[in-house]
Image 1 (tube, rainbow, N blue to C red):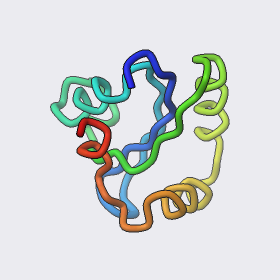
Image 2: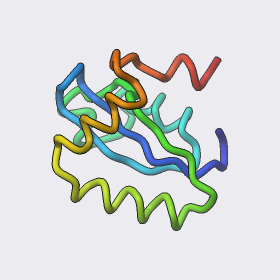
Image 3: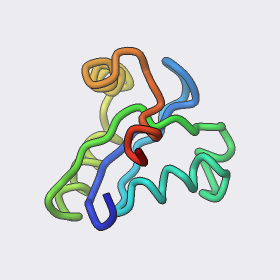
Image 4: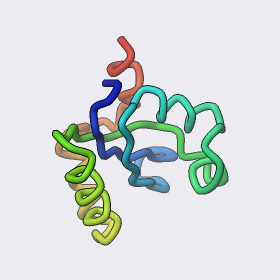
Length: 97
């Protein structure tokens, strides 16, 4: 997953606080969120569970998708998560395994 542009959603818990982000190294970035190394929103609101992600061919397309999603209604984001991950499992172990 290194050097793979990715849009991702982190959550504090099921139906909890959500964070949409973009990265080129999903494993490293989620690890930073989980360990409080990413200053700001995710650290302040304890948003540490990877609940959705989408791989992209280019960073430009990933950034464009992230910007779109940040404008979305919460209901749309919840629907996206529920479609890929209906149990709201933390997907971090799946991507590092």
